[in-house]
Image (cartoon, rainbow, N blue to C red; front, side, top):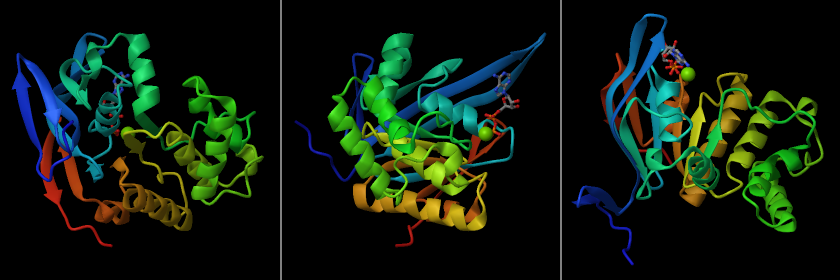
Length: 252
Ligand code: ADP
Ligand code: MG
């Protein structure tokens, strides 16, 4: 079929977007309103965004501007008021809730500020969970979970439960879990927002390593300047729109 080209291009055929090339996510005219009693808050007022395969995109902006809202919409966790998101030629909000949940499980990895690991389960079991939910064979899933935990530097912590791990280690488990189903895109929402300096650094290095070694596409919402500097592209949200977009040379 089509080879990934150096240059991104898009065709529209009979009103359907056919995305050939290295663009794997395209968000079009996204708006999001929230109803608060009698009033409506217009959080996102028209966001257009394309994400290329293998890039690290950072989203910054003041608290409350809608960064998490946008990230959730990009990952199909929340539906926009209008607009659409196309991931690898699937228009995600045209899927019903069941199909959307399946699509998310197979396509997107999420890492949040708070890890949301399941407390009664070990690191290994937590990482395995998305694979088991995706109905993959158990032995294969556990083997892969172990490998992922080794990759994130936790090969010696397989049987630890979340409360037996440090904050930085818990986030690494969350990253490994997010990678369980080889997601096309890893979406992270202030992943180091709750960590000390040293753990933040090592988490940032892990994300960077994933990008460099596996060409993993990563979107990061962050306040962290150091993390923003590692990105290929930084987008700044302000008043519901993209205010600034900066491409930068990644520092290898
Ligand atoms: P950020 O991540 O940039 O700090 P959010 O995306 O979390 O911002 O929120 C953007 C705005 O939308 C905020 O004003 C927030 O209060 C509002 N908001 C977020 N979620 C909801 C919700 N479920 N209901 C009503 N308002 C919401
Ligand atoms: Mg947020």
